[in-house]
Image (tube, rainbow, N blue to C red; front, side, top):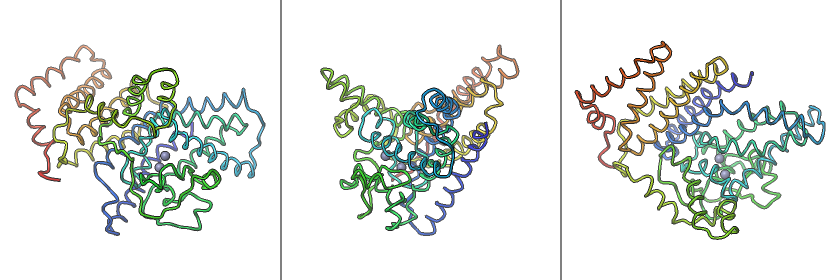
Amino acid sequence: MEHINFLAFAMPAFFLFLFIEYKIVQRKKRPEIFNYESSVSNISIGIAERLINLFIAASFYQLYDYIYDHYRIFDIPSTILVWLGLILATDFVWYWYHRLGHEVNFFWAAHIVHHHSEEFNFTAAARITTFQAIIRTGFWCVLPFIGFRPKMVITMLIVHGAYSFFTHTQLIGKIKWLEYIFVTPSVHGVHHASDEKYLDKNYGDMFTFWDHLFGTFQTEEEKPKYGLTHPLKSYSFLWQHFHYYFEICELWKRSKGFKEKWKAVFGSPAHMDQDIRPILEKRFLQDKANPNQRLRFKNYLYIQLGVSTLILTAFTYYFEFLSAFDKVFVLFFILITLVNCGALLEQRKWIYYLEYARIYMVAVYFLYEKNLTSFFFIPLAIMIFAEQLFSLSKRYQNVVLQLETSE
Ligand SMILES: [Zn+2]
Ligand SMILES: [Zn+2]
């Protein structure tokens, strides 16, 4: 499968563009565009999506093939006109996928993650989850169903995805005349804003036709305030992915009768009880060590993200040649690392055990590869011994979890 090799280069390309954006931001002296914690969080969510995508992308493509082979309505050839039609059709499907993503709780639970980010730069473009990719695939199925060839559809989805990457930046200002046709960074920035007049606007991905047509277009007037109306005050990797599903469950539990329960799942996010999230956060996220202080040892996070990215790039490239055991190992290694990054940002008390779990996992992997499964206890014994002898947990607290004294 050629597309898989091709996707391996998406990661270095992403970091190259991010680097360029960061350098321009520095030169323009607009440091507020980047926020350290938020960028780390955005990138780790993007890495997870790319990682899990490797395991499920093939089934997405098989689904398109299956629908095309069994249920297509028309036989559409691949002419230039058809390609143009497909660009429009793709963006039209996107418009509705995206709009429903904001109007239906169940879909919003996946899409909200993209909107957590209070910074608007290329890292926000990476902030996409697997749940979102799965729902999006459901919508894309319309295209092979109509009769567009799956290969064309897949090519178009990659083009479409690449386009929307470049609309997440503040470095390109408002280009009024382009807005009549194309989604510009300014137009998409409005979509990411929480200001009253910008809410529920600009759902298009490449074109603004649909927003003009359905009355959801809004041009940038005042400078947008990016992020959610009710910001998520957590960088926990898992909580960011799942919090809205928990909120739906809680609302469902509180609702009485079929109609109310239906609304809890398929109703509008505008009607979500705003007191639910704080209650859940108290239940699940109360073990923060120092909620208002920032981590000083930032390089440790950069190293973890860097290593994850390098492994993911190589992993993507060689994915087809690896054994199932290798794949599962890499999957869990990177996921634990990403949970670790979030926990570091939040200074979770349990992070230290996660570090041990990761070291143990690597040791077990190599022992298994060398057929030394009966020696699994050795790294465990060494770790317990080292902990007792050198009180590593204390050292870890003092070195890695060192904090800046004030904000
Ligand atoms: Zn959105
Ligand atoms: Zn966006």
